[in-house]
Image (cartoon, rainbow, N blue to C red; front, top):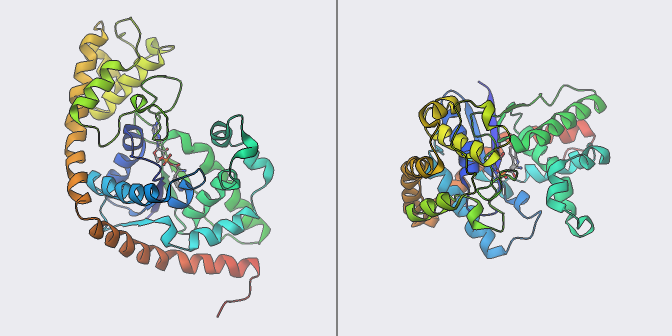
Length: 333
Ligand code: TYM
């Protein structure tokens, strides 16, 4: 059975982008696969996080994942910092990855912006830690949104170079699973920017805990254009905001944007936006309710994460020990 790994940063409340691009696919993949789901708090501190907020957000992220249908009994859900193997393998990968490879990472360029000298060195080597997350479990399939594609290519480069340098086939190739019509959900305020939990504008995103009124308001205010919806997908070219909303609607209904256009061609946003609001509320309200119920018992969430970490470490520790042996470290015992 293929082993699946994926992670999500507890750097805020998860957004509709996280849900449609990743979490919902994770839930579906649980049938027929062995899955490891990780709340990546080591990744989150590559940019400043208030300690109390990080702890709260890590718990909230776990609660949302559970509310969406992540099953911590049949699969593994844990916090990255609880399993030492991630940081240990990441160090080895810091010594395998080349500076030139990291220099090409577009997400680093976006996040660092103009102030490159001032960002943490962790942000720079972030993709090496991501490679370690996956390869510490010999996971071969990684469901992510489209924005993680380049990081997974780098993870494959690292695995290949490790295998080549140490004369081994130890690390398997990784296959990205980028699924569905909403693999890249865009900001509600700017169709050229990805919807992000760390965007300074709350109006740019739907949060997984937004209530019905907030969702309605955000969709009403979402940037669009004056044209009615066209009857073909090709005609959405050059209309990124319209395309984004059609993609979201499709992801929450049939999965096929062409069917959405068949239904709404010729209709304006005055008709389409209320319909979109309705499907969003129907999908998100039960998740928000269940999240709130789970958060009433934080000790139970923490216990779930700890149980997950024990099971994760049981898989990762021997794999990382073998990588250390291949590198030439003396056995620690
Ligand atoms: P993060 O926390 O930014 O996002 C978690 C998942 O949500 C997807 N996603 C989106 N999908 C569609 N539209 C969007 N607007 C959108 N925003 C986010 C992301 O692609 C991701 O799948 N580096 C990763 C976390 C990570 C990881 C890993 C993932 C750490 N280690 C190992 C896979 C394997 C990240 O920052 O995700």
